Structure formats: structure tokens, C-alpha cells
Amino acid sequence: MKKYLVIGNPIDHSLSPKLHNFWIKQNNIDAIYNKKKLNNDEIENLIFDIRENKISGINVTVPFKNKVIPFLDELSLGAKQTQSVNTIFMKDNKVIGDNTDIGGFESAIKKLDFDLSKKTAFILGAGGVVPSIIYALLKMGVSKILISNRTETKTENIKKLFNNIQIVSWGEIPEFDIIINGTSVGLDNNDQIGLDFSKVGKDKLFYDVIYNPNQTNFLKTAKQLGNKFENGKLMFIFQALLSFKLWHNLEPEVNDKTIKLLDV
Ligand code: ATR
Image (cartoon, rainbow, N blue to C red; front, side):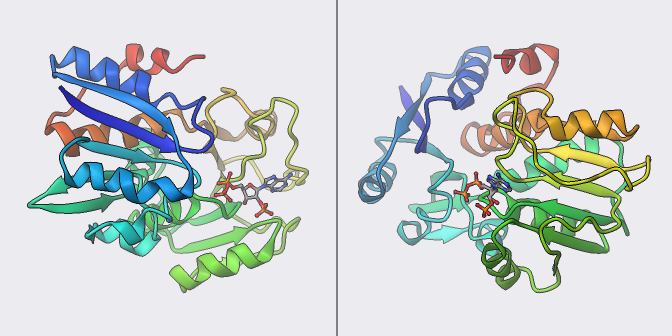
């Protein structure tokens, strides 16, 4: 039986095992997908288990997406540029790090039928997933990316990866077509991001990477102001699907049942 894992710290709330095991069963694959809480000093041994074929694939989440990189043999183009790996596997005797958060975001936006070409994107936050979102936005042809984070040094670090992005001071709301909440504000139902969106207009897309709760206060505000809005559920599902495809060479169907599986 093949073994798959998601590693992170914390990891208790990860829904990856539920989704992957559902698809594993649906496709009659002899495999199991578990979660493992990890410490920094355990990464190297775990990657060794991939090399030894004891584990067939690993998903990586906060705070290890960057920390696993020194132990890998090769990175996909996206993983390299974002310095972020969420999927690990062996290919031709090499341990490969890939980044399916990029394709996950891209697929989720495409489902919404919101054309991003030549548009302005405004990103809030500078955490783990933000470089992947920037990479995907550039791939989709946005003309301008603005980014704002409470702690400005972190946006400066992201600018080292993507020269062309522009930093906006925290609290300022520039003109935009799509705004993405990449902060952790909203994970708690009572969280308020503390920004004033009352002057942004009506035809914008508010996107929240958070999908639990289903509707953060950020998305509730978007709705009240008459804008389009979407949570991160499909992004999560599509990143999982793309990892599944890399590991099993099969593409599971995404339907209502898949989406319901993630209702917690
Ligand atoms: P990590 O930084 O470990 O990748 P993350 O959850 O991906 O963790 O990122 C947290 C993001 O949410 C950061 O951008 C953080 O801003 P800081 O860099 O200033 O910490 C942002 N964040 C968390 N709480 C916030 C708050 N109350 N107001 C504004 N931004 C907040």
C-alpha cells in the first residue's frame, strides 16, 4: 500500500486527508493519506523516506513550504520562482518539489469567469501562499500587482522574488479590479481586517483564500457593498487535485459531492 502525507505545524485542521482518501477510494487505488505534525529537525528524515520509497508523496503546508527546499533535488519552475513547495514526489530517482497552489488559484479564478487580463490585483498579506498567488496572477496576464501587509519588511521580501510588484502602505486602499485576502484574518468568525472598502465601487471581485469559515467578514463586506466574492474552497480543492494528478496520473472529478466534503 502506498503512503502519502501532509506535513505542517499545526496540522490538526487539515482537510487534505479527507479529500485525498475520498479520491483514493473512488479510484480504487491501494493507498492511504495521513497527516503528520512535524518539527524543523524532522524534515530531512522524512524526505529520506521519499527517497527510499517508504512514502510516495508529501503535501507541505505552513510553515514548511520554503523550509523543505534544501532537501530536494529539483524544483518545478513555479516552485523555484515562488520558493514555495507544496507537493513532493520521486521521479527518475530524483526528489522533486512542485507547487500546485499556483494552478489551484488559477483554476479557481477561471471557474468564476472573471477575466484578469490587463487588470489590477491588490493583495493583502505576505504569508506563505502569497508568492503562489502572485505567480498565478502574472500567468493570467494581470497588468499590475499591488501588495500590502501590516509588517512591511515581509512585502519587501516578496518583492525580491517578483520585481514588478508595488508595495502599498497598510491601511491604504488603491484602485483595483480584484482584491485577495492572503492574511490569516478571518479564520476566527469575529476577525475584522480593519480596512475601509466603502469607496471601492461595485464591480470588483473580493477573493478570500480562507474557506473555513465559509464567509469571512471580508467577504460579507464585499457582499454588502454589491461586489462579487468567493472563498478559497475551490483553490484548496484544485491544489489537491493537481497533487493527486502528479502522484496517481488520474484526474478526479470536482462536483458538488467534493465541495460538500469540505463543509465542516
Ligand atoms: P506565515 O507568515 O507563517 O506564512 P500566514 O498565516 O501565511 O503565516 O500569514 C499570516 C499573514 O496574515 C501575514 O501577512 C500577517 O501579517 P504580518 O506579516 O504583519 O504578521 C497577516 N496578519 C495576521 N494577523 C493580522 C492582523 N490582525 N492584521 C493584519 N494582518 C494580519
